[in-house]
Image (cartoon, rainbow, N blue to C red; front, side):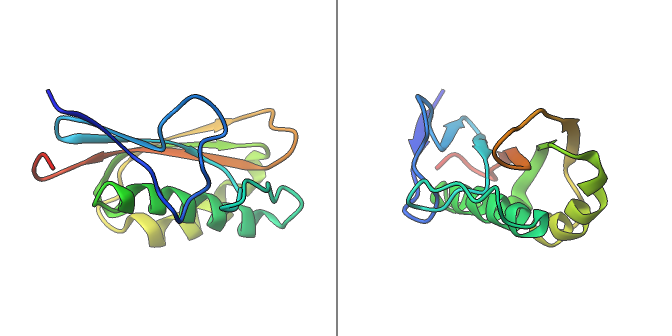
Length: 128
């Protein structure tokens, strides 16, 4: 089985010991992305919709590094500090993943310095 890692100049570098994206066979696993810029500055002080777009933009950049897109997502994990933001997230998220929507898990988290983290699994048509 092919295992290959990817990194992105458009997404923030890993904040720990992990790969931004890891391909295993026909699947690409995207590590969780938060509202952090390319210089590793967290933007937890921004409104939720700005944080959500930043996290999804970072996740899309990770997908792009693997030659893919969030439109190839088959499973997405969403971690929210405040579940009251679920509807606002859903409206933003729909534009990133398209149709049909991937399977998704939505979990409340006890983040202290930001409001959202999103990860995903993508399916590729062929091994790259």
